[in-house]
Image (cartoon, rainbow, N blue to C red; front, side, top):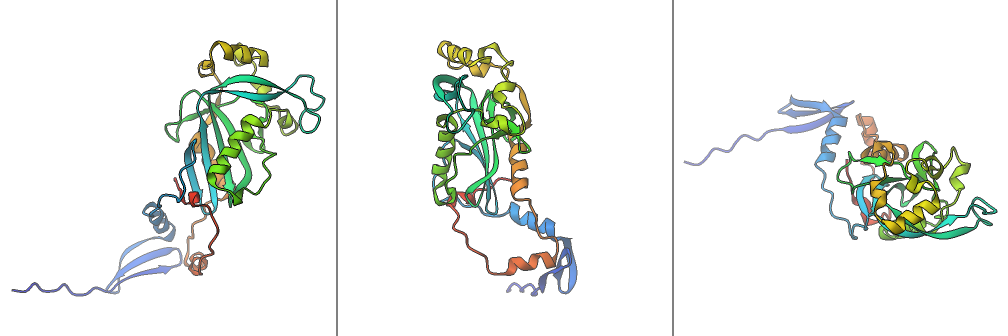
Length: 283
């Protein structure tokens, strides 16, 4: 006996106002808000591997359209840096004088937001005593010049000298340029002229071993891992919270909530020359 074919169903999905309705044979079977349906589509989207390797030191990445927020992490290490001298004629820029010092650092985190491959002014620097393991990990305040509570950010990092068009280079080159600027460009008093003092001034009382540059330098010679034992003050935020704050500032999430708002998305897409890395996404 041949199996009888199931009768064909007339299955339709209709959008009316803010709701999406699935109708079977003309009768409504399922209904939900358009916004909720689009969120479900995001959860089931296929995000393929990027066309270039993941840049070293990138621990978390979040993409929303052409906006990308990266959380970068540098392992504990000693760095030879240029530090503003006490008798420098100028606090920064031309005329500023520096001396080279060998300093030990704990885990250093830089969280930076890009739009179209370029900086957005959203960039922060933190410390940690252990490597990042989750988005809920706590961040600690650094003791650095060039880092301050400014521009609505807890630990704004001055990257003023990185002025070239970053959209024209790869993500590997962008990440390398950020670290190079942090450790090679010179720590100066530029952030003292923004909304408040740098964390170098604010954090000198946290531990006698970092109470002065000479003490920091001397302790580095004794124990290059001593910064992992310093009780750095908490920033009061997790890495996930800082990334979300940055993303919401540069690219607020605005999913269509009605058929009218969905209509522009039905136009042919505008193709941008985005680097392959921007296909990454965490939510």
